Amino acid sequence: MFVLSRVLFAGSVMVPECTSLTACHFSAVHRLSSPRRNSPYSSVDSERYSSLVKSVMSSKVSAQTPESLQAEDDQVYGPVVKAQTPSRTEPRLPKTLHPFLNPERAAEAEEPDAGPPARILLNRGRGRSSTPSVSRILQQTLSPEQIFYLERWKRRMISELGELGFKEYSQNIFRQGKVFHSALEDILTSAETLRDRKLSEAPECPAEAQGYIQSVSHILEDVRAVRAVESTVQHAALNYLGIVDCVARYRGVLCVIDWKTSEKPKPFLSNTYDNPLQVAAYAGALNSDDNYKYQVENGLIVVAYKDGSPAHAHQINSELMSEYWKTWLLRLEEFKELGSSASSDTSPVK
DNA sequence: GGATCCTTCTTCTTCTTC
Image (cartoon, rainbow, N blue to C red; front, side, top):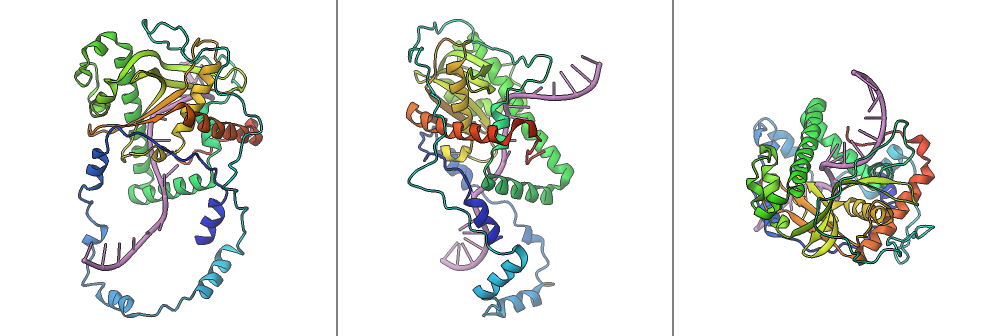
């Protein structure tokens, strides 16, 4: 295992150092300090295993030495393959540094904030489009490190829940995410509800989404001038597309907003893995898409919790956004090198 | 009508001691 991880981790892509403003640290502390679940060992018959425990505890000197462990590693995994050490001082740059912003658009174009938000539906046409999506590109260019941890997590979950239980669990978290997004979409497109500001009491909110909506209610109070909801964006030159959750002003700043649900607290931007790349990809596409006449320089990732505790909001300013844009371009280049024709589904969770 | 697509999520060392 040691050998395996050493090789896998050396190939991972560096992501810019994350800095973020968190809307609330309390909930994370609260969650982390909650009582642990019962230990799986609490049901073990300690009397029955007492001799085994004694024999393990009385062995003061391990029969294993670093040399014997190395020999064992060599036997099991083969010789160590030393991966190239990535240069830390010079992060990789995309071959073509395509601009994130659109020079033909002013930073704050004269776009009226009033009126219903745009909602451009995805129209793939009759034949299968060759335009890949943001999700597909990110999924197929995961680092070996990410694949390793995701696979490990999946194995552990299956050993705990069984194949069927894991399938149900996955479907359940997907469904919750969909219900939450759908409820938010209704709220954000409803001018009346926005004016009332009693979002968690909205009658059309399904019971399954109420905790999440309550979780983001303090964020929604700072969201104004919704310009797009669940709207398709396509990059004019780089040939990729996606569906942006929301474009609106958050505390006065125009942002691409990505809503997420999570079972675990995510108090830092670094806890959101590739989500900032997704946001940068959407913003860059929107900036070049003729269906939109303005451009967006900032991002916001909002992580909502089912129990209603305050969501974490991670702002991505324009400087950070341009860093994520570069990393996104690298992933895009990597995807194109892979060849979209060999696009078998490598999703680690099915 | 059926098939397909875009999303929806999931990861970060691991153990002991106080």
